[in-house]
Structure formats: C-alpha cells, structure tokens
Image (cartoon, rainbow, N blue to C red; front, side, top):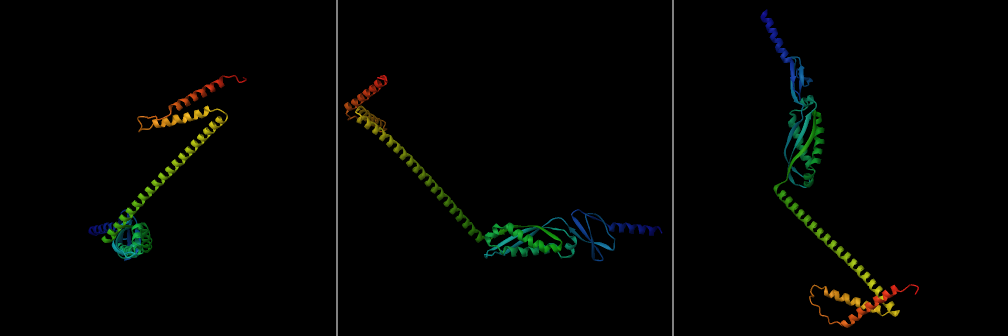
Length: 297
C-alpha cells in the first residue's frame, strides 16, 4: 500500500513537472494536442495537460538578421555584377511561422535571393550603384507581402555590396578620373575668364575716370584761358603775363621732378621769365591798391 502511494506521488510529481512550462522572454511555444495546434504559450510560466498536450515549436519572437548570399545579377545595360544584402525580420504569429511554411529561414532566404536578382535586373549599372535605398525599399515591399502569410514582418532590407567585374571597375575609374580632370580644367578656365573680365572692367573704369579727369582739366583750362582773354580784351595785359609765367613755371617744375633728370640745362629766355615774374608782381600790387582804395572813391 505504501509502495502504491509512493508510486502515485512520483507519478504526480512527474506529471506536474511535465505540465509546468517556463517560456523565456523573447520566445513563444506552440502547444499541440494529438498533433494539432491548440494554443501558444507566452513568456513566463505556462501549464499544459501532460501526455495529451505537448510543446510543438519553440519560436524566437525577437528581431532576427538573415544574410542574403551574394548573387550574380545582370543589369538592364548588360553589366554582370555581384550583389548581396541583409534582411531584418520578426515573427508576429508563432502559429503561422510554425505550421504555414517549412524551414522558415530557408524560405525567406530563397525568396530574398530571387527577388534581389529580379529587382536589381531592372536597374542600369549607374542607377544600381547610386540607388541602394530605392532597391532596398522595393525588396522590402515585395518580401514583406510574400512573408505576411507566414506570420513574419520584414522590417528592413539593406544592400551590402555591389561588386562590378574588375575590368568594369578599371573603366569606371578611368571615366571618373577623366571626368574630374575635365571639371578641373573647366574650373581653371572659368577662373581665368573671370579674372580677365575683372581686369577688363578695372581698365575700363580707370579709362573712364581718366577721361573724366582730363575733361575736367580741359574745362578748367578753357575757363582760365577765357578769363585771361577777357582780361586782355579789357586792356589788362598783366593777366596774360601771369598766365604765361604760370605755365612756364609748371613746365619747369615737371621737368625738374623727373627721376632721370639730375641736371637741368636751361636754354631759356630767362629775361622773359623775369619779366613775367615782374608782371606778376605788378599785378599783385595793383590788386593790393584796389583793395586799399575806399569804395566810394
């Protein structure tokens, strides 16, 4: 009797051990009854009917990463390149992931490889190299729609490497080098052009300013000549003497200021010069007399 009770106790402990299941965080267990799915155990402590029920699949519910093997792709312009990538996915329905598809990772891998070749084949090589984000977006939409029935959500698809053949890489490098040399030459030519334009504009401005200065000088000279002519016409020859002496002294001063002239030879009529200076003196005295004379006088 005691042995029977002990046997019952041991059986109860074994059944209790079989009934209680601990599901770790990030996982979900499917429960099968006579081979048919009945429910899912969530993370934590779960209980099943021993012998009748059993754990079917232990499903990883965390985000998972799957590498897409390198694929030979022929682009729209017949370039043969090697493309690989990586896909991020997460299971949202453990039952579908367990019973709707066999070998889930293999199925996702094959689906990704075939669609990678299909999508990349629609791009020309230059677009393929520069539009990785667009390629990833297209692959994401296609693969996510296809795997939705398996209880899988595709989160991201990234293109890792695109490797053209070595000959094509050399040609691309040569093309890139030629293009950069062309840009450098264009930039240099534009710089020279702008410099020449600036120089011409500066010369133009200087010429305009010089012409204006000459014009003003000519106007002043004409006005001075007019004033001297009017003074001579009114019977005042001293104004003419003053004018001639002033020009005489200015010409002599410019000649003396020359850097190449250290000695001045004066084959000049100094008598006339002194006479002109004397006329200036007389003109100055006459002006002083007029100033001192009373206005009413």
